Amino acid sequence: MLSLKQSLSLNSIRSLGSAWQPSDEGARLIAWYKNKEGIILNGSDVSKWADSSGNEHDMVQATASEQPAYNASTGALTFDSSATQNLQSTSDIELSGEFTVGIRLFPTLNNVVVIADNNQPNEFFKIMNSTDLRFKTDNNEVDLSIDSGSLTSDMYLVITRNASNLITLHKNGVAQADTEILAGTAEINAIGVRRTDNNPYNGTISEIQIFNRTSIQLTLDVNNYLSSI
Image (cartoon, one colour):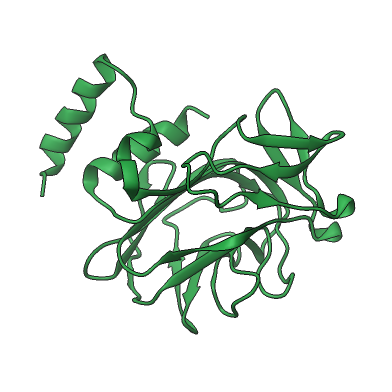
């Protein structure tokens, strides 16, 4: 494994040439809901956010009242929890081992689900309150607390699980002190709700990246990429 010093050096070298893209990870990129791309509109609302990874985990919503609003200038999707606005895929993303999940978001309420499975119970990433993110899978859960500040803010989060099932939360590029252990197969087929249409998200989401591996370099790359959105 690369040392942090080596990883930072490689990251600096790469920045002088072509900028890193999630697609550079090849088959390790499982889903990519890319800022300002893959958006299909129904008026000013989003009926589809296509998966830019090529794996066709497209997120769609046919019900007009449940379609999030779109801001073309920022690429942000605004979800209104009072209308249970959400997007869902007909195919499941399954993460049985390592993973890296990166999200650019601005939640404005607590007790809201960011990504989850709307068919299988107890599969979600959820903003519990202003300081805790809950990851639940296979009916087991861990809460990851942030060092300072609030989770109801404009931010980017990167959640990783390594080969030892260690879960680490990064907020705005900084690894938080609270780490947890949790194995299990995380299943994802929805943005903004969990089974069945519970804890709807409120706020904006601008980008989601999902990988089936983790490393120091990948975490750096995802954090750097999200920081520019």
